[in-house]
Length: 190
Image 1 (spheres, rainbow, N blue to C red):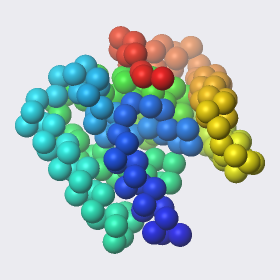
Image 2: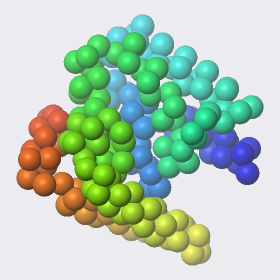
Image 3: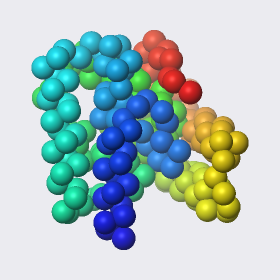
């Protein structure tokens, strides 16, 4: 099972695009690996090399051992703290907004976003329960038979709806903080 999980995470590294992860969070490092996000965040050639090395090294490490606190729903999250010394504060803020746009309400499960909006323990529990229910429903869609393009489109639609529903746990002040942190809209490839 560990080998299967490692192979999945490694394969994700190879397909780094700002497509939304159908089963969990789309990691910041996945987003920053896409050319359109690199352009938006203004990544230099030296920064790009450092990010690619970080991803390659992370994939190599995962071939032999999964990181502590490995999260199947966000398999590259352990690499994200290593982005901080690579990116400027301005770049990190823009990436954070793109991350929140990509993950909608699912981003509330991220500790940094939860702290930003001052999520209460009760709200965090609602997010955890809602996230688990959405992931279970999506897993059911994937395992219920043959996966077709229509199935994938339906899963993407359900994931978007579930993410929007998770945002309903926020009060008015928290919603303003969340929306302000999104920054200007980013156009994701479909």
